[in-house]
Image (cartoon, rainbow, N blue to C red; front, side, top):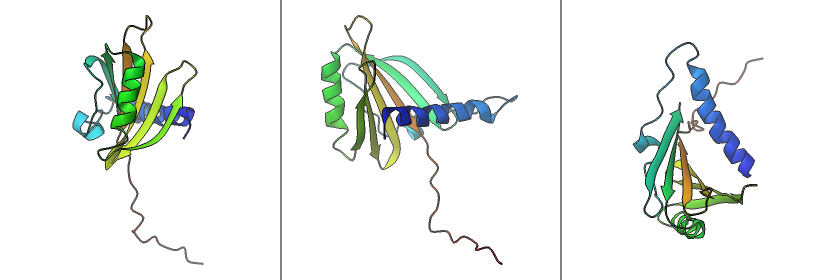
Length: 143
């Protein structure tokens, strides 16, 4: 998957939540435990923001550690302990974008330096993906 496709999937999940309830109360985002059953936070993380829509949740945290250290941390953590690092890409702004899977929802991680490069921002996104039952028999059309 390319970085643009990763961002498109996340944007679609967040936008679908906004559009699903047009004229009504917006749908509730998933619970933290649903979107992030196993959430690896960077060293010395502090909360910045939380956003979400139907089926998707994004958490932004800040670490006082330098960006290369945080990148190394995530490359290590998301390659073991049940995680599979599926893709990594550098964005045009230099941010590292990772996609990891486990038994549960996928995890998107975007790691970038703060404006003054004194700390690192980490955006963690999780989405509850519907799984289709491929074992269910489908009716064949009659001719």
